[in-house]
Amino acid sequence: MTAAGVKGLALGFDVVRPPSPGVAVLAYHRVGAGTALGVDLEPSLFADQMQHLVASCEVTRSSE
Image (cartoon, rainbow, N blue to C red; front, side, top):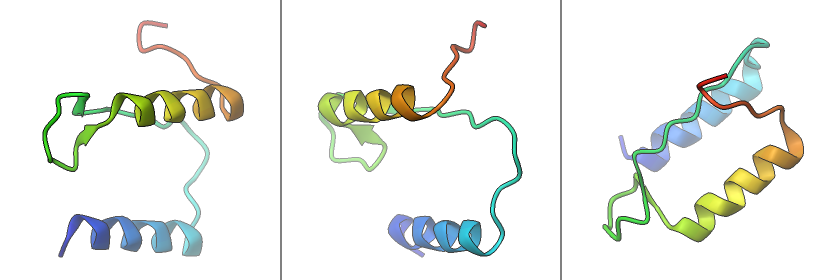
């Protein structure tokens, strides 16, 4: 199964059985490394995602 297929399946599962309340931990493999890998995010997209999270979620650092 492709990565896109796995992501689509996970999204469908979350619709059928919503995740329980709790904490979500985000881990980024690479940001701005310039590779073609799916785990390497463009810095501008990473910044957009961080802005969205700060605007819509309670964000804390792992050191807190």
